[in-house]
Image 1: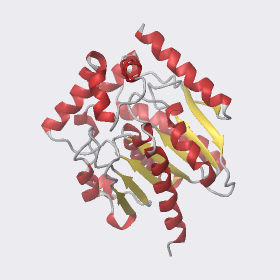
Image 2 (image 1 turned 135 degrees about the horizontal axis):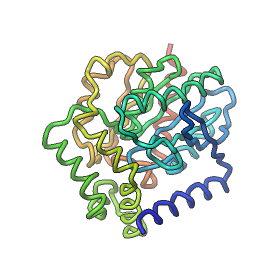
Image 3 (image 1 turned 120 degrees about the horizontal axis):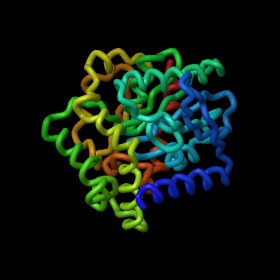
Length: 296
């Protein structure tokens, strides 16, 4: 039943986004794996593309609420299914995570290189962690970084245990306990949303991935963060109840001269999930990009 629900929800989101003009296409790795992209044309043909990475247990189609308000600011918007998620057929094999990342990033890099364009790279949570890794591997591809509560801070033992409890225990045994961590107000159909969380986190690929992305495996060294050479917008809500304190690690180690930090009082861990924060998130992005383009 859980797997059926996960497949049904995936089918519905892909169908709905296709109806409103979003295209679904695939990149192919050298191993024959498919990386699913959800794309839409923007209204600023001379502007760079926006490439978006979602968080753990999410998928590209969930980022529709981020993409739609930003169509007027970019030439193209591309949401990418991360390995183990959505319609991405990259399985989570018994190999080091960095090997899997290398294959995933190389395929995406090769695609972007064909277009001869730098991109604005956006990521939330696990997607923010992946965005940083991509920028470290292929800095020539990235014009700017937008990070929304990214993973990758050095965690205390207590916080690491808390995160493990959320994603390993709550997601399967008590998904309703995740709702007050993700939302300021419970969403309509909270019971169904809880079951959708159970379904998504219960897939074999997500379960396998969680064994590789525990807090003990993910922390960026301060030298890695300090080496990021692109303008960076860090958005971290003070109502983030998943990563309530990790913003300090990024404040300390991202290059201050290239980093803008915004901390809205009411923003949660994934603010685009709860209206009207999605529109506010988009407006922060637009305002910052305009400020970058006007900078001397």
